[in-house]
Image 1: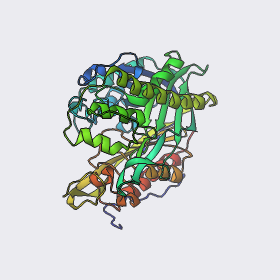
Image 2: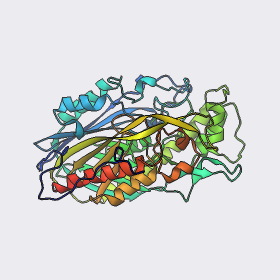
Image 3: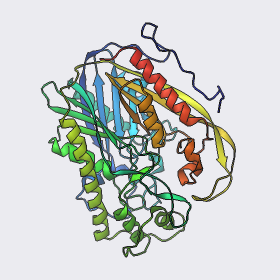
Image 4: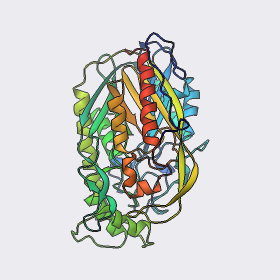
Length: 469
């Protein structure tokens, strides 16, 4: 598609020129960091299955990191679920910093007050959308205030590792020969674990900012409130650090990324739908459909089934957390003088409205729809660039942004600062995959992939052009 209406204009980047529009020049200064977490479990609808009460992932938190370098402030927030669009502006007002310096990200746990039937707790009030207020606003501000109260001299270091728990989920079923949701071991899948570590100049831990691309769906439709593997992992890390540090999880480009191992959670879904697991091969989508689409009466999980899937979530979280800890342990002392600067831009692509039914397997039919708006952001923290978007993006797009970025230390952060009206954002190539993500996308092909990549790379270049420390 070659339509300048929908194609971001790339700015020329030269160190000797004035700062590009939308980028705030900022000088480096001595870094101070504070962090906190505030629980919000009781705001979610009651689960169908009473929690066992023995697992940390059954609790839901808002976690916050506040940065201050003497000339400006920034805030990084993570919510065990989705991130309401109402929070960033209120946090910016609280901190007296630019709104572009605030990133509020959702971990996207499908059992944390979003996704699922009423008995599992859809939690419509907690969905991000474009609302101007949400039940989480006050708690987010409380987390920020607590973090401000704990500001102390800090240093920052960045590193990456690899974790093989995720897998591409767009695949042609060997049984039906149609597109479905299952493990595709040859599809695009970024295994990178990004870790931004903040500690005191003496080496005492303050906070970790973690990024990985994998849907937290272990208890989707399971009727148990859970922060899923991100909650298990971050709680484990905090425990290892003696609860002296706060660990935040953020999603990468996870639009087509599932956990590789879903047997335990899919077996639990069978029981929830009144069926018995007998060791049969499990493909996720048909089992979900029995509960999600076919009106099968749901029953609470019994204690044994609930414990089995919850133990798996803990195990998955611990494996992931150990890679985060390995990366953090091997980082050097880091920088103490840090430049902080953010920028945001809304890009628009042509939309579509689906006119036929069917969740997967067959092509969709569409009429022209309203334009789709996506909020793109870049927050530069020293020599690290956090490139964010308020949507679920296919993994290959995130990989392209990092490959083309002028900043070697670039992190792709999805599901941040609300939610676009786009639905999933596939690559142009993936529009031939008749999966539910592609069929339900409100975006016409030919615009979003290129626009997101070019806009993020351009904005990262603008930050880099101002110099990094």
